[in-house]
Image (tube, rainbow, N blue to C red; front, side, top):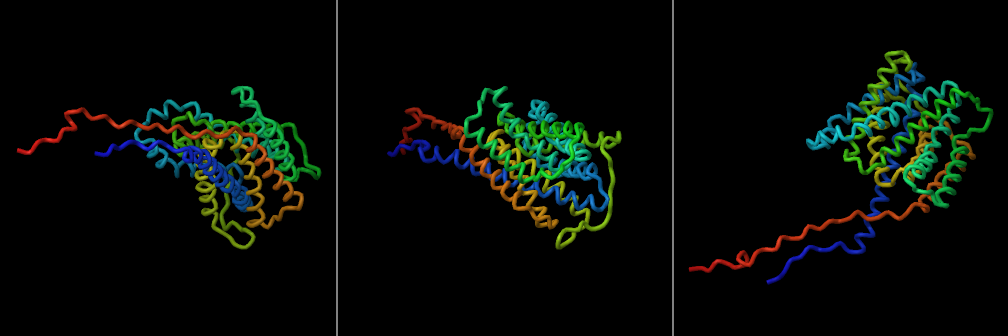
Length: 343
């Protein structure tokens, strides 16, 4: 008689687990960056038709909330109590990470150059590092600090902030508000103690954001305006309704779900730095769709951003493999082992 036992996880399998988690995290992060990055080109085409930034972002968030409502509910598998337990993160995600980050950014660009507003908002990775240091005691390593400096300098070159950019104190204030929203996005998304599935957190947060932005539009704080016709790109055109649909499905629904999945695998610090590739993706899409070719200094900035992300990764502690719990097989009693005697 042979004895069957559970196979224990090998050392190779244990070592492969964090590598697989890192690879999938970076994959989700790049998907989120590309999805977020195309939003600027789509929104620019709509605004050329007479849309306001407020109307574009309101429909973007509302469509995403509707698209994710059913999948987000199905992911709960009847565990509706998880929503009540996660009210705080949901509200914080919806108000700060979605509505606040987008609304404050659009308020900032009314009195600031887009490059300056974007640069201030994308100080969020530095804010994440400081938050983890002050609140969690996770002191940044030397590589993290060096990588942050390299990425920040690359971001300055990539956004091309030089050249007589206008400065406004109120605009800087709004941009700092957008930075806070982006920081909350990374911190809440990376909280793997949150029992909500990523798609459910994204769906519920987007619903909260849609309500908040809708109220802002009703009181006149969010200017609304619409236009009809085709959105013109460099070599083709699409109907306005298709551009709005892509804004909602690709640049919001897919982007936010992928962003949460990425930061839960990479952590808030590394995830926030990898998310800087969104600026690179935005530049590439603007080049392909709008014909806005980046200058040589911007290409150098893109290379420095990627180099900074790599250096930050070198400063991250090694990812621990997930613990694998092996349930022991029940031991049969002696009388259960005795086969019945044929008569």
